[in-house]
Amino acid sequence: MAHEAAATKKAVTMPTIELTDLTRDEIETALRDLGVEPYRAGQLFQWIYQRGVVDFASMTNLSQDVRRTLAEHFHISTLAIARHDTSEDGTEKFLLLLRDGRHVESVFIPDAGSRTFCVSTQVGCAMGCTFCLTATMGLGRNLSPGEIVGQVRVLAAAVALGGKAFNVVLMGMGEPLHNYDQTMAALRILCDKAGCALPPRRITLSTVGLVPAIERLATEPLMPNLAISLHAASEDVRIRLVPSARKYSITEILAACRRFPLKHRDRITFEYVLLAGVNDSDTEARKLAKLLRGLRAKVNLIPLNPAAGIPFQRPSDDRVNQFGRILSEHHVAVTVRKSRGRDIRAACGQLAIEGGRKSPAQSLGDAI
Ligand code: SAH
Image 1 (cartoon, rainbow, N blue to C red):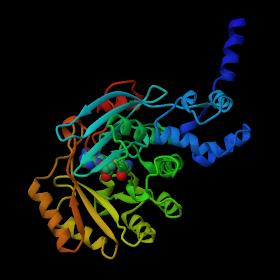
Image 2 (image 1 turned 90 degrees about the vertical axis):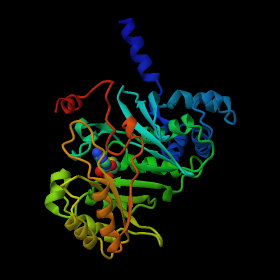
Image 3 (image 1 turned 135 degrees about the vertical axis):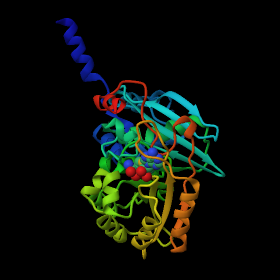
Image 4 (image 1 turned 45 degrees about the vertical axis):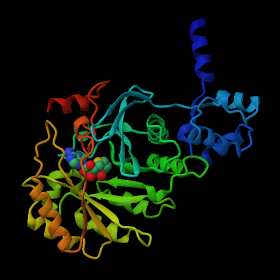
């Protein structure tokens, strides 16, 4: 009994609030409730996001009393690197351990003069796209804001980013708009002037096309770049590839895109995974060009990154080029995405956890 009482007492006095899940406004409110000056939230942001200090005792511009109060009520978690692979092309893939023992993957993509972090928003994904390896895991769970931002924090330190500018693409595991609130809170934390101060134009949110969430995003004060995973110009082809297409048609998605507020020079990116003999015909290219007419769009062609268990083939380079040529002849801006990190399975659609604890959905995915 005595033992039980001690355990209960311990549970009550454990710091329960995860500080990295809170925006600066939320920290201010929490501090006010504790009788600590709210402006200390800005100092906490500087320590965590600018200087990488996560131990309250080392936050020397806070009084001993404040440091003690913070340590009693807050906890600062940092994702642990469980595995780190570097590709021949310089791409680095990280397997990160979450507090509950699950894992996510994040990728660092250095390119001529630019640095991009590709981060996950969920463990696994519920969208079920038939060409994507992450889909075979099913959805494990949503990531919290701190777990999303934490990927940038850990990777930036691991690659010794220093103060260099970087981009963030929400193109890792998961569907960001299926974890809307936590993803948006993460973006508010990343863009906060007292922390990473990431300009929103350096963030790209990629979505499978969840129309109500796109409409909601259109009303946000903090606006990332938008990328839509279209993958087809015909509804019947898209339904074969993207299950959510049954709910939201190409027509509805493009209508939402036409309404989406864009700044003077911004464009919406349409991602198009090319699958041999499925969506890579001249007819489909012409249809796509027609659909995008009048939209401030650019198309990013992604030749399929094949994987065992994915029932599609990558088209030939000639086919990819021909598809791109048709689009540009129709005055559609088009780029072909370079596949980065394929040798370490860090390329688009290749993120899936192999080791670690597996959910039933994951094990099922392995069996298919
Ligand atoms: N759920 C979001 C973001 C994650 S995926 C979305 O659907 O946009 C990032 C991009 O990689 C998407 O365009 C996705 O369709 C693409 N992708 C998925 N599997 C792929 C594969 N095997 N080869 C190439 N691209 C793939």
